[in-house]
Length: 278
Length: 307
Ligand SMILES: Nc1ncnc2c1ncn2[C@@H]1O[C@H](COP(=O)(O)OP(=O)(O)OP(=O)(O)O)[C@@H](O)[C@H]1O
Ligand SMILES: [Mg+2]
Image 1 (cartoon, protein in one colour):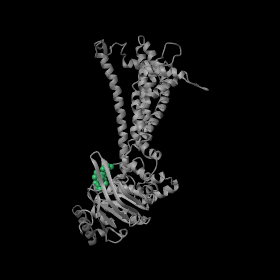
Image 2: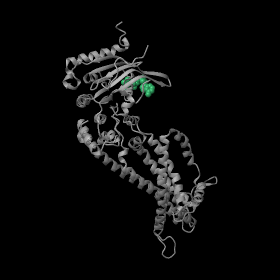
Image 3: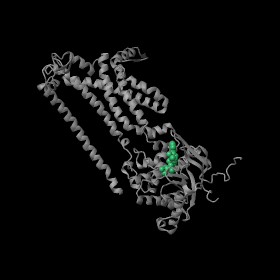
Image 4: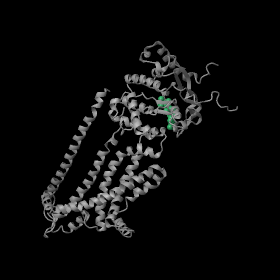
């Protein structure tokens, strides 16, 4: 077999393009196959959620896209360049499961961190930080320190920080995992609004089916051991950007939840896609 | 999770801090009082010949010669040093000597802090340096100071560069720095290695280098480790300066006075204790001044609230 450059060549028109990605960790107990044969494309401005049981490699995939780890096989491209180059060029913003704010910096200082490190002029920086603080609704708290904020507020700061340099790609690993249900729904709506305003593509890891359905254009369902993509469920709920809270009570919303749940539960039984049709 | 409630937390915490600080001073004074009471109680009720185990006297004699009364020592401070005409009061002599020693110790502290932090940076930057240097740094503190001090002095006296000439006090400062650098090197290294993995990864996503990571994450994260190390270094610098004064024979410092007045103890027992008390106060002042640094850097001692 002659390895051809993939049938759909990645181009600048795709935000993320993973082709044949494997990731094995070598540990003392032996090799751990975290990801196997991952093919995934994310279009610019598209909202894609990764969902699947614990240990199926969602975080690992996100870290490969962020170039915090490198794949054992296959390629990950971001906006047509290697993930490494994309990190050097600052093409993405990232928010981890923990807010990860620097405790000795104020809210404004934390949001300013990437701007400062990349040498934005102070005047411009202040203006941008004011804008971001307002965007996440923390106007009165700009001069507070992280230990004076609730978990939800800290998470909003982390999101503002991820957005600071107007990245065209936003990577988020269970950013709302630690929030109570009310804050969580509020933050989901906020995130949709922000993503729509900035036109950013989002890769969003979550454990919650309703969250994935509410937010996404497409939900990527993953299965464990080895981590692979079991199914990709497109959401037929209109543009993610136009969604509002009342969607949560819509019939179509529940249909999509069922679709994702079936994909999720069917995944370990049916194995890789395509097998069941034979 | 109401925003107003959260905004209200800091003042309450500040009030608690102030209360804690007052209580701390209270305990300090109480400790001093207990020491004086203990001294007098032992003097009144202890065996006249002290407690001897084998050949070693583990508790002192209670005679006025070995243990003058607390008030005698206090009043002695106000009297002149010698009977000579125009002699300074004892307390002033002690304060002047202590000031000289403090100055030398401060110089030693600064050198020790600079060297300690530099070593920690090198060890953090190159893992190989850590495994190569750390054992030696620990070993360095086992060299007996008494053996070491005259050596430094004789080396120093050979240094002469242009108009610069090595002064005797510099030998004392070098020895003080030798004791001071150790806690700083160890504490700073631990601190520089302390940042959360998530913060280091964040900086990696910003694709900035070692230097920017050092400035914006490692150094700030090291502050809580550095402050106690600096305090320890201050106390060490004072001890080192006093011991070095004695063993290099430097005049005018409190170390010299301790030896000198001890020689006169048979005729003037209360006087011998004055420079010792001065040395203790000196250590406290030195360590206390570093606490001011803690106030300046208090924002670096915050921890992110757990969610
Ligand atoms: N640094 C590592 N070294 C060794 N094994 C690892 C490492 N990181 C991840 N793994 C393994 O890879 C697999 C996938 O891990 P990953 O963290 O990506 O899962 P996940 O889907 O994010 O799980 P969760 O939903 O619990 O966060 C797991 O089996 C994990 O043990
Ligand atoms: Mg994970």
